[in-house]
Length: 463
Image (cartoon, rainbow, N blue to C red; front, side):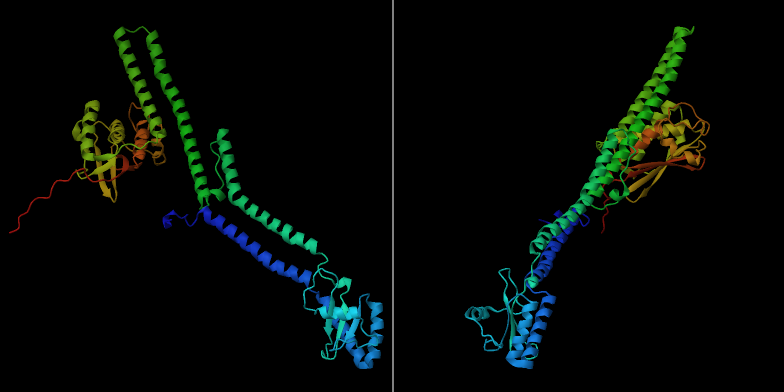
């Protein structure tokens, strides 16, 4: 496996790995520390038991030094009233320090004596040996461990807590963490998908999901982007249908009036041809705009020389509008080559040029200029039509937008700039408007490229 195949630094893999590793380490620590604690609680004498037995040994030592065998015997008789267990006092030779000698069974039990620090197993009540605290060599207390001092009385209960309840609680916490990490954002994605199904395209994910840096955050941002795209597409289609129906209703009404009026056949045919041509152009532009907005297939790109393209467009525009070619000037040099689709870019520049001619005075000048900007070419086309209001500079790219009174002109359906903007955007470019000089300046930012061929360098002979 190569390093490039590993997940990224903010990948969900690392979050899950850290969560599971932390859970495993926590369970190991719990098993070790809590196991040792329970071992002490269930196999060793408690502090209270040790203090009590040590105190008994000190009392036996005092009784021995106070009255020897008689004193020990008197103390043992008092212990019979305090403890029901067997109690004895022996010397270093394992003989009784009291008046009553040890029996054979008691002597046999003396060979299995335990200390206070030894583990106590759940097999009967063991006999313990507690040396005299003052002089351990003088003697020891031997006692059968009282029932109340036996450790592990709640062993089954603590085993259930240790091996069942506590691991279950930590596993539940792990499930809560996984739920918040994985299921919560997935539920939000599901709710957004259900909102789409209910035609609620304005629903967006919470910032908690979209601000994440892992794969689920990327998925959430992709969902929001797709939702915005769906909303804009549906809104555009609805707007196109409304405006198209409105724009078609007017020429159809004029045709109906003309057909019912008393006109000669020649004028009627001219009107029908003019209205049909306008409706056909409207439908073609609307379909073209809808295709540019919805089509996502990559357009074939090639190197395009802007100067040559401008000459072809101005020739057609001069024929259609009657403007002389001298009024459509190009200041872009022959080195301006951009990468794009020839037909789409030509249509965009043609729409921009037609818009500039339509809104310029008869003797006005339309000028194309540009400059190299790193990996891009920045082109701009200026007219002398008076410009538009600042608040309308972005709105002129909306479909069916016509600023009546702000820029004098006639004709058009308000689709040319919208088609041009979408065509430029589809080629990885950008288009925007600004007021400059006598009129409006439309800016285009296109990807620069090298010409498909370069002339060879001139040969120079050096003697």
